[in-house]
Image (tube, rainbow, N blue to C red):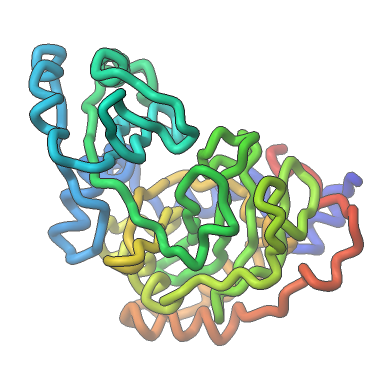
Length: 331
């Protein structure tokens, strides 16, 4: 089901050109991009500002340093290796646990230490980095995601994307990994996107492969009951990234750890537009309202404003099945 540009305009849908020129170009200074394009810089900056992130086990910066990787990860029951300058989930290797036969991925596949070395070598060579430039491999502690969310995901950690505009959380969605996405929370690879009510953190709409969904394709669990725990704290953590980076339009990727609560995974200075599809609603009315607000409000006040003005009812229980999602927003 396709829509005319005039129909998208009436529904407040923004496209890439408006996003790039009106919001990213106006509110994001290019000199600040390295703070979010480099995950290691983001992590160190977050620690400085008291924003919780996954524990950093160590880094590998040179091919020679790969020799010390075994000692670095020894004693850790699980860990994640990721490129500091990667994007779109590329190059992220999750080891769920270690046994006598090797390193076990969430899928059950086993890797040897040689496989781990090879993966880190590829990261350092820039195989997964933006522009193919030499990179740094980060080794982080495994996230123990909240068990309340286990039935909504498959072989991966579900994350929450929150769009922060001038410090206000304006729209959010949860990305649920699937078999099709190979356990990664990447919508383009087949993860399920679930729009979230800013007021309560409850599910309002689900989508996969440009079509609406009411359940998870692998677990079969319905999505209507999805509710993010500690929601207001998560929004406040995300909103605080405005002061942390100085960037006015950013995507914050969050996760709920069952021991440490909401945590920041990474930031994106050029967040995608599929979040509108997941919510069945355009960003423009919310962005227009935020632009009218005065500067100087604190984090809690900004979050309270967003929860009051951007609240909405869920659609999942009354969606006919099947139903097409909104049209592609990449043009």
